[in-house]
Image (cartoon, rainbow, N blue to C red):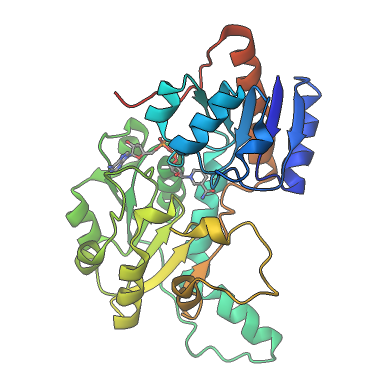
Length: 332
Ligand code: NAI
């Protein structure tokens, strides 16, 4: 199929071109995000390949359909950026990569936990300045601490397995229980209970209307004083301004983010020569007990290979059958 690939970075090109030797689609790479201004670039392409911060709202989908696009192939797992009702009305099929490497995201989550706890980010900078003092670098043993996992699907389950290895007590909150997590000893509780009992709260649920700002002022107040919060799911699961208030008061002990509500304006770009215009992000960057990474949890070689392969295989399956096993169902 003719495929317009949006939000392309060099690494996307490398992995998609390599995988495409097996699929032979006609890929055209565009650097900009997909939105109302750039949708014209997709004119005449029967498929569009999009990423996490591409805007697939009603006006963009309508324009895509008018221009002849029949398939949106997301090269990611989350689909919160797509208006699925509009897509169905426009007869545009949406497919995704439901599982490429839960290990990539889970291992990055644990990297944030370890780095924040043992203050590796501060130790690294200190030692390079010739400062070998330990004041301010004290952490805590993970052994026997309580980890609360919100969303115990594929990624949450791998986090549970790893943290089980550290000897942690595991609590879970989800709309359905995962037998693998139950087998690991995860105890399912209500969200307030999980927040009240956990030393570390880590978020692995999708962004939906139900989970938007799930972690708000009230939820933060319910957390243990000094607890750690980790978000590698989607930015808007957390109310960032509420989190800043909790950090300033000292109630929230530390914060690790790989995703941010307003990340579309800055993540994935080199802004090191510019002044950051987002005051909320700029404030977050000033805290010594906050580590932010720019949506890189998925970014391993293995994950990139699987993302490229599944994306192109989804397109081939749609081309051959008019449907695909990885279709994102429309909400009823
Ligand atoms: P999954 O679908 O296997 O698991 C999600 C879990 O969340 C399910 O068990 C589901 O029942 C649960 N859930 C749904 N609504 C809920 C609610 N209202 N409250 C509590 N739990 C709820 O998805 P997977 O693969 O584990 O991914 C989780 C999320 O991680 C994705 O939706 C995506 O947003 C994010 N992600 C982030 C990446 C990154 O690079 N930072 C990469 C890949 C995914």
